[in-house]
Amino acid sequence: MESDIANLKALHKICYGLYVVSSVRNEKLNGQIANTVFQITSSPPTVAVSINKQNLTHEFIQASKIFTVSVLLKETPMKFIGHFGFKSGREIDKFNEVNYKLGIIGAPIVLEYSVSYLEAEVVSAVDVGTHTVFIGTVIDADILSEGEPMTYAYYHTVKKGKSPKTAPTYIDEKNKKEENEMKKYRCTVCGYVYDPEEGDPDVGVSPGTPFEQLPDDWVCPVCGVEKTEFEEE
Ligand code: FE
Image (cartoon, rainbow, N blue to C red):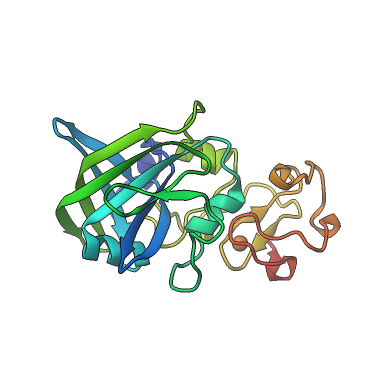
């Protein structure tokens, strides 16, 4: 959509974190990556999350009126973020093989790669078109580890993370021309770009490894598909 706004890049200067927002419906658990989680009042402690209406987590929060937030560590591997961010709970059980506990209000709390968590009960929901902003009173919360939380800027610039199209802050990559034309390869499923200069240190692929030399069992660190799903940029 064309816009009259002079420079939407100004919005990219807003700071965010990276979180897993989870909920439950009929004892089925689901969670997703979100960057738009923010505290809005302290008395009572209240937070807001912005969730895309297309996402299964949205249905769950709307039905159960509860959600949890796990604040992700800076060191969280891309694979873990991709598991919650680029896969749908309609196709897989995201909590299978993930370390979690059920909170006092019954929604799952991701414990892996988490600095802290909170549980909230929805007190208000604001329809903002593509998304709903759920506002919740914090019922319980705790610190899980000593590490630093990940910022969205770190995820994008250091981890080379991408936004799924359903994210509030999604940037249309087609409108961004890459400055150099090294042999980078793009995942056709999630848009992750393999940059040989960076490698994939999370799984031991050192910087300087060309795409062609990646092991056959290497998979997209974000969405988990095989090398064959990649094409040259
Ligand atoms: Fe991918």
